[in-house]
Length: 545
Image (cartoon, rainbow, N blue to C red):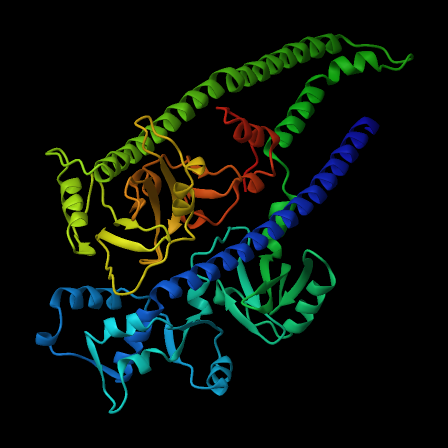
């Protein structure tokens, strides 16, 4: 009896230790998610700054047309082909962007008093040549006012926070995530799960007092919630991001015992139970006499114990040698298939890129012939809705030394009226520097980057090549490559492609593309880090996410 009491006490202490450890791990994971969420907000803000630098002029034109400040010229006064391309770009602009004309400081103040938080991005035209280009298609609707004067005004492009926060990484750990400051809550991932916070200032103050965020337990609308709060500087203001976990879910995640530990405890208890007759012989009192049935019980106990022990050995051996081997073979087979599919798709783009760079027309590639002919002509931009080789492509573009697009053959709306600046893209920077690009067996350097398109705002892959043309030294081909974005996988398998720092470039859960660091999510596993550092093939078990 004393032995069993000590055993139960040990189990209780182990359970408490495991629960405390799980609580610490859960909170650490929660703050990591919030930190990544904040980093993704900063990256997306930077993306919009570049997007409006490239396409802000089009938003201004759309606003001026809708406000009646300018009107289209008659069809007989304009180049119909260029006008159609311009119209297609205007139709493809993000519908949630609100363009306003900045007349004085009061107009901005009025916008800041609106109920929803609007992120403002400023743009002012300083290029007189652009105004003259647009004069070919539009005229002023006001006397004594020219297109140049109208377009030289100061414009602001406002993105509602509800649209801005879409498609950021959101792990299933939290019931919902909110963005707030000292005055109010601006965004909630799942509004139905949480009433408005009555006193956000108190939460902000508590987070500001502790570096790295704060963990609290709150009662909201009669329900206990575990909340993790992280301060973040965003859009030149101070905000807080908070993630909420219902108390029931928190208890389930931190109070449960690992299945393997439960099996171990159950096995020990069964062995102890089966060994009771044998233990009686060892711990029998000096004055107690053994009975005939003790020998029978002892024999049964030995048979039962040996049988149970053999079953455990067989089960362990099967898991260790049979099941593990089958899983290893399965993982290797799926991995090899994934890699083969990706390499096949990339090789097809590299073959197309080589043909375009070398201007090699061939009967085997009708697309390459079309692109070469288009690039050799005086036409700057060509749209082809059936752009595929052998899967759909988005854009094939030529850039100058400054990263400005000079030639484009695309399936998406595109116009050469406004300069598209891509000098900040890694596929341009690294292909410009031969040492940072990747050599191919045929001597054609290339570079691959996972991007979010400034044009379509969708995720895709860009593969760039170094050309022999000194005026336009960079060729880039973009596509949502099927093997990276729509790979067919078993239900229990996920895949991820990362760079050397662990940044997720592609994930079978597409919301995590460019929104997660795989190494950090694996708790900076040393074996994983060494495999990446040594560029070695390895197989290991990691704790992910």
